[in-house]
Image 1: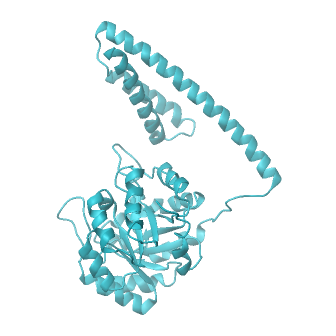
Image 2: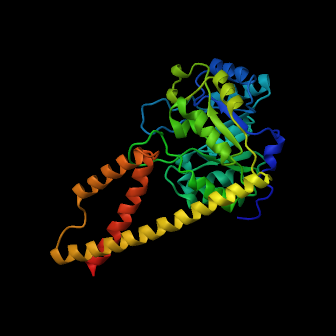
Length: 360
């Protein structure tokens, strides 16, 4: 990817207020609903009205959007309120219709990002556009696939680019609809610090009660803004009712958020931080050494299983380890979700070590 230092320039034309806020219903349902939402959003910090026009659903039979008719509702809302507009596009036909209705921001959904073929078609249909294009992360945690989608648009001379973090699907229980996997967007920021990063807390949470905490975490991680699903009557929404909030609640959330300084010049702060980071470094070294020793023991177990012709996976033992570690972690401030993720990774590595020894 070429020099990206200009990528954040499009944020300035929408104003320099932090965070940049896109809000609106999951789905455009009726003209009245879209206009009502837009007029209520005028009293918030939102700069852009979003609404799903075409709604790809996980399973058929659910509401899949009103289609192109809804674009005229967005256009009317823009004329009446001055808000800019945004919608998802999933193919060149959607792009053409959105451009004809002067939609300002087009986003690429998670299900689309997973297909380089479709992304390439959409990128080519937008070649040279001055519209802003935001790319959601793919459904599964894959940084290369996410960045690849961004690069396809950039190669079509589209410079008003950004990404939307909407969380990732996972196997297993979680309090989130889509787990955040914060490390992936952090890695993205490391590679392209000037690529605007927007959080979609609605799709991560699946529950309106979790939106504030997700937004605050994102601000603490230097995100540029949010896309938050907002509806005049969330409980009556035709899609994703549980994760939508009212415009009034949106205003409460944004006013309660704390925008922190990226750095501090305080001498005491810097000295205390250096001391604590030294402790972290020492603990990290201890962790690595412990993991190395654990895998050495796993090698020994693999040798023993080979000699006795014993199967690799011992389900009862694995369940016992998990139960013991979850109990130990829960009593000391570590969530069950965190313990599961850590020990599943450790267990997988242990099995691979044992497998190599069994195959020798």
